[in-house]
Image (tube, rainbow, N blue to C red; front, side, top):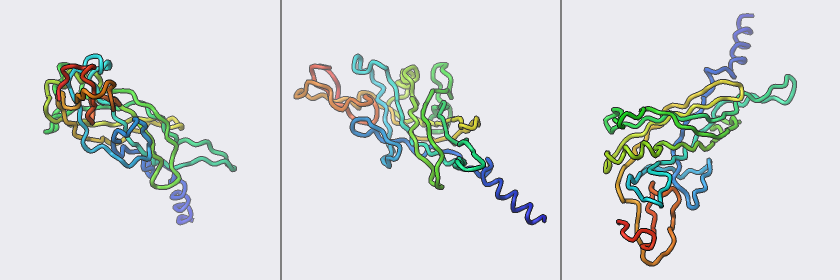
Length: 226
């Protein structure tokens, strides 16, 4: 009888929180051509760069860094459409990210009185997986809002560390937070803007000021530096 009771307890707890593998940030996606991000992309960004220069009208949203994280929902699928009926409690709705900006030695950056760490919104819905690999999803996070980008000009050129944790709510009304994803971010000034007198329109302007060089005509910015 005791062995039977123990076996029942083990089977019941297969869906309990302690055995749920949760959800994780697997990496940050590289900017694709056309800026169309897909969750199952395996092209990750291992060398993020933020240009802290002011591009004037070409950068109307200010100095910012918009990351697209690939996150995976590894919660166990518990939906059952047979008796006993059970609605799925493990669909994840992404709520916010906690971002921390650090020096390379791990100490928090002094950002002129701005909160550090700080919260920014994110969004997305990810269903639970049917295998141990889970279900991938996208989490857009503005890890450097413009007000923070202005302060980072004082650290450019240089390198900082960015730590990100994402919090989500399950359809069963539970709150779950990922582990911290930590990545280096290189800072520079006027390193991602190039001039070409042969063109008239800005080319490759997706997420201007981060990760890759954008080419503009001299009629757009006559004295742009490169």
